[in-house]
Length: 60
Image 1: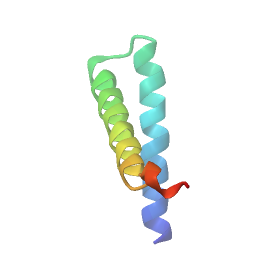
Image 2: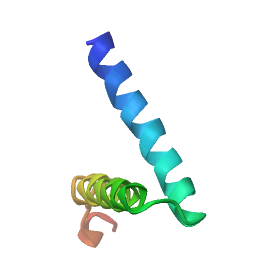
Image 3: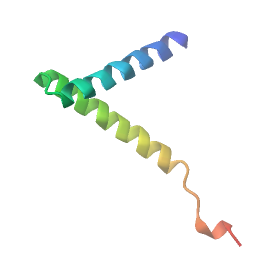
Image 4: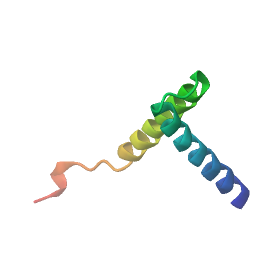
């Protein structure tokens, strides 16, 4: 489990580095990695929102 978390952390740091590098005009492959990183972040953000929905009818 620790190894898996380490791999996820390393990929996250590398992806963030790619986003910064791409914003400064890096090579084409860096822009592809940056796009994939941003898309993965959006997916994580959306999955977190869908699990926390509450209805407004709970308040009285």
